[in-house]
Length: 104
Image (cartoon, rainbow, N blue to C red):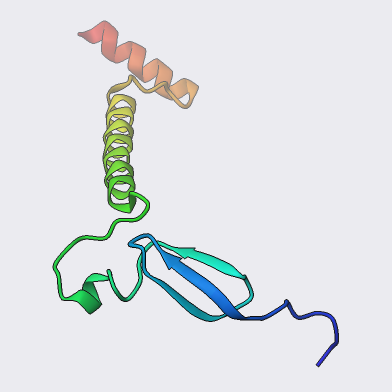
């Protein structure tokens, strides 16, 4: 192994949970703050509670609603383009269009 490339390892790193639980482990940081541990995680406690740490559900719902709005706006633009009078691509088409308008 190469020398002087590995981080310092702390055998007595203290981990502190948001629930107040603390324990000692080995890590590359001397103190670690966590939001969920084995004392408060629903899997280990058997409780049916929802753990949303960073508002992920709200962010997902916000993105989903925004995607629906964008899809609706794109559909509206596509419909407007279809309804728009198309310009003739050639002189022959323009003459035919003028003849049709004159006939009606």
